Length: 395
Image (cartoon, helix red, strand yellow):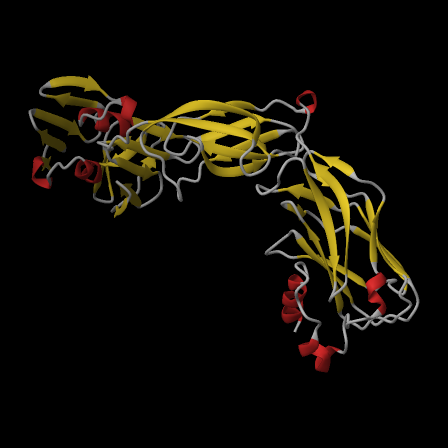
């Protein structure tokens, strides 16, 4: 029922809606023609010059009709010139309105608010006073135009001018700065401006979004690439005070580059100490036994799993039971390890390792760096996180 009532109220802003004839049966007469409610009026304590978000201070609805008001009667308030309500005000109601007033902002169109009289009133006079209601301009606000507040019921209405929208003088305007502007596929910008001001973002002269600075004047903006990808090349980032549909005040600009996307030529391998799973290029693999740290503090990895990430066939890994040696053939390399010995050879050239290979539960484990280095993975491509005990390398 309330949705129908609100819809009819909106029509009254052009003052063409007929009285609530279709609702008489369920709600009684609400703002009927020739009712005494035509004497309801708005008053304000001040008219302001508005240069951004502002507070209406105090305004009131005054009723000297001396008539009772039915339960759930709704008044509507509307701002013009592209301004919207920002918050619920403090309400001080007296006379027949005392403790019967509910204020709500239309979430679909915040330039409109509704005042509901929740309980039937008596036939005396009454006043509804609003304190500290904030309003703010939108992209439709026009400079040098008045901001008017309309009060509307059925065929009754009143208006007051609450301010005139002006451009803030340059001497009072905090300069906008761009502190950082990252060059990447999803650039991130930060900077400073006047506190709590709405800023408009342009890229290559086209509106891209808005951001509101915090109380400390800091703002940050992440480009919405999910919705509007930019092409490779040079682009211009512009940010200015949000002031009307065609006006951008105090704007600053900076160029940034979207580099061509480079295809990844490596794949990432991740082992975790104590875990029997590993990942290869984002896919999960399973191990017969988990990597571990030996008594010397060295990380040991399962040989066959590591070799598999390098496309070394099992037939190129030769195990000699009598000599307890492992021979790996890779391209022109022949690599030999001996269980229990910290000496390895590559093409016959011996080198010393920090710890010796071992066989544990039938699985051969070799020292992390010695194994990876011998198979062509350099230290630059190996990462070890001591906190998470994760080993990763690029192949």
